[in-house]
Length: 151
Image 1 (cartoon, one colour):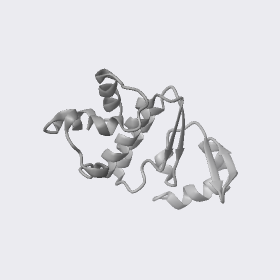
Image 2 (tube, helix red, strand yellow):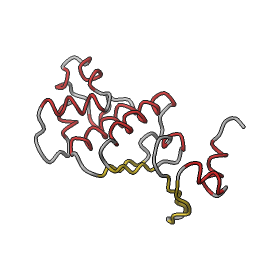
Image 3 (cartoon, one colour):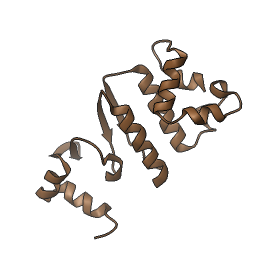
């Protein structure tokens, strides 16, 4: 697993840095429960990981680079609700101290963000906080109402 976490890393992080990132992405306990811990082989393309574990691994890789900007494209797509909530926690933790851009179609993925930007056909059509966008009754309002389960 260590090699998978280090994939794309520009430097050689310490064991402590790797452990911190794994804890932040909620992969540490998973890694330690495997037969060889961090040395466990996870198969080609992370075949032995679930979708949520793979997403968290990708985020761990990004965090090891310690960039000022983190861009996540559909970080919770194709995941069940429980795993999506887990990924949301990981993204919230990863976002601390850095500019984070989260691209998502499901509004539940971006519940706790400072600003939402609604794009359509490659153009920004709205931008603002939830209450602002709902008050405008524009595209965000339309998407909001489509994705609500109860009215």
